[in-house]
Image 1: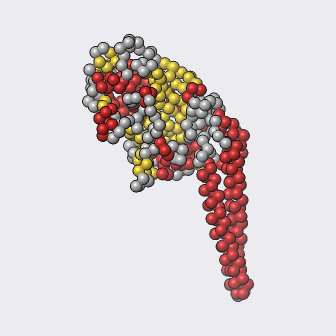
Image 2 (image 1 turned 45 degrees about the vertical axis):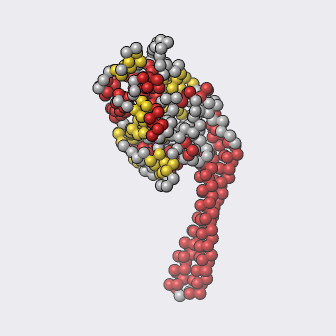
Image 3 (image 1 turned 45 degrees about the horizontal axis):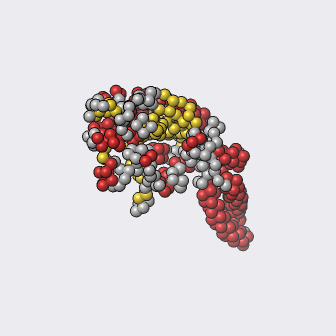
Length: 424
């Protein structure tokens, strides 16, 4: 959530940033925010003045009673009664004004970083890096969903029987390869200094608001209505909310965390050949990295995250590219996002497998997550997160790019985790 003081002091910067995102009616909502903020501040001043006057009179009343001026003291007591009623009314008005202001602020996305280009959608994203060799598989190459059926390692029909489309069942070497990837990713992250955690797979409403999934993506989350809990769309939500409301010391930064979780996304309206097989699921596994950073270091940290993900893909020997997302494709909470895509040779298309994002103070403001700087003042941290990695499309890329006439080879780095070097 943007800070209202920042909007007030940098109105044109905010409008320019929202224009990069093609945010509709930006001027209207910003004016509504400024009006609501003025109402809130004016009401707060009036309330503070009345409370100050009431406190002053209360002290006078005590003195009058001590000096025996009972009648005058009783007259002032009537005045304090009137002030109490006024303060009660102003408190109610202040709460209404604050709620209205927050409701407006929740609707405004983050301001893109200066390096983010204006654009409408994914077609306007910038490719900034590409690496790896795209294998020549010949004419008989199969897409991963056919390979999964051929080698009986992923059963999409069985998952549909148990739950519905988008909930596959991993079997035999497919399940072991899935587990191997999770362990490999976690080992890479912990070796890089990330602290591993296991977190709940359901979160409360406050957690959803804290990281910005609510109210923006409410329709994309599975909602357990009986308990008003949400199945997590990513480990980013519970991991980042571990620090909600905290005041950390500057010396504690950076805080680095990694965790594996299943992820649940409704993906409403996702149909067609481009979402076949593992390309888009309602339940999938992902290993996440989260950083709580000093504002002065957050973009260095983001670059470090990008290099870390690069190293993993190099070890897997998968062809990949990195995109800097344009304003129109950048997520609601992010200031700058780099997407990683691997090339699916059998499908002849790029598949997103990771994103690394800096949210600057946007999430921290919602989370009320601050650090105490050297001067002893509290200041909002910057939060960052990245996938390292999302498993379904990585698995799809391995199956497709490593297929041979004799079976599917296992990337060398994964063989110790799998216990086998071939699916046949």
